[in-house]
Image 1 (cartoon, rainbow, N blue to C red):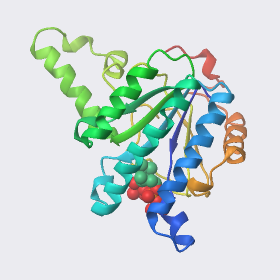
Image 2 (image 1 turned 180 degrees about the vertical axis):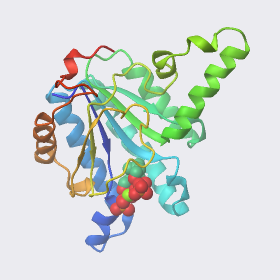
Image 3 (image 1 turned 120 degrees about the vertical axis):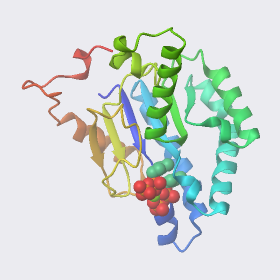
Image 4 (image 1 turned 135 degrees about the vertical axis):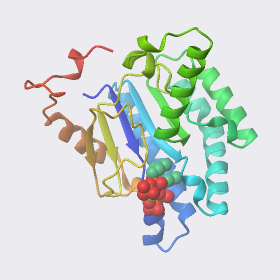
Length: 240
Ligand code: IPE
Ligand code: IPE
Ligand code: MG
């Protein structure tokens, strides 16, 4: 079983368009797919689920779609917080949160604080997230520490670098799932996906359900992960 699954939830717009509905309806339906996926991962004992909800590039969409998404995040978080807490989910939001609407930022703060001590699945929601921005921010933080004389640049290694990323306390994803058939990373977890197994399904995100997830897991279990060596290595053999 993967310890950490990352998901690029793509295809909401196409799902709606195929039904003659506005794109927004696709985003709304996508929330249901996310709830199903989170529950299923939690039931299977998967340690972490990291999903791509809004990229740094998604601001370039029409203003009404961006506004709808921000309002949707707020509504869903408000509505689901109690259930998340009951199910012992530990929720975190990764990305440039400071530019999100104020009410959403407050809710994020509340949800993060409330669930911080939970023992269940780590649920990471990447919001205003960009892999390149994350790497640049990490470089900036390390440079600041070096300039202050707190950090000798020559000691910076992969662990020190990774500790500056939004995912600092998380193991790297073992499995990346992308829906809607697109075969690209779209600026998601550029560092962390270095050795993830990639699974692409043609299913559009709102149609992604437990049977789709099961198919992804079965496919994952057939992979031979060598990490550059010659022998297959399972994730339990990896440090970190
Ligand atoms: C993914 O679905 C959700 C977000 C990026 C917020 P899309 O909105 O990208 O759906 P398509 O790709 O246009 O079908
Ligand atoms: C990636 O989907 C971002 C999210 C799922 C939030 P996009 O729809 O934005 O990606 P591209 O534009 O197809 O690469
Ligand atoms: Mg898309």
